[in-house]
Amino acid sequence: MARQNNDDKKKRKNCSLCADKVEAIDYKDAAKLRRYLTEAGKIIPRRITGNCAKHQRMIATAIKRAREAAIIDYVFD
Image 1: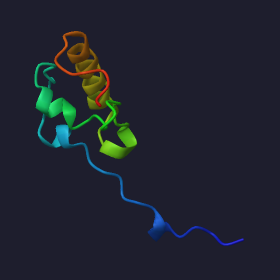
Image 2 (image 1 turned 180 degrees about the horizontal axis):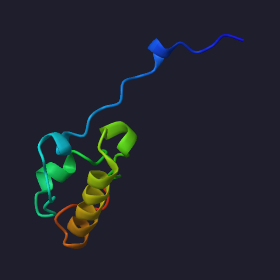
Image 3 (image 1 turned 90 degrees about the vertical axis):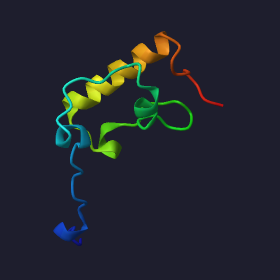
Image 4 (image 1 turned 180 degrees about the vertical axis):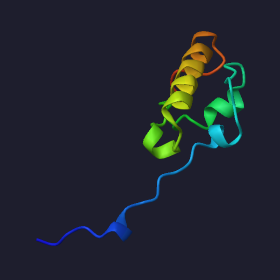
């Protein structure tokens, strides 16, 4: 059985929010939050966006608050 080469592993993305030293994410900033949503309106997972766990939780909370306040739709058509 062939072993997987270490060169085949993808490099981990760095958290863009940590690089910008973001402390809080505003739920009223719909344009920024839409970057983390799919075309169907689902939250993009951390393994794809490259965010750290702390900022991914903050993004998810902000998106959920924006949905409750009707700033962002639950489902996009």
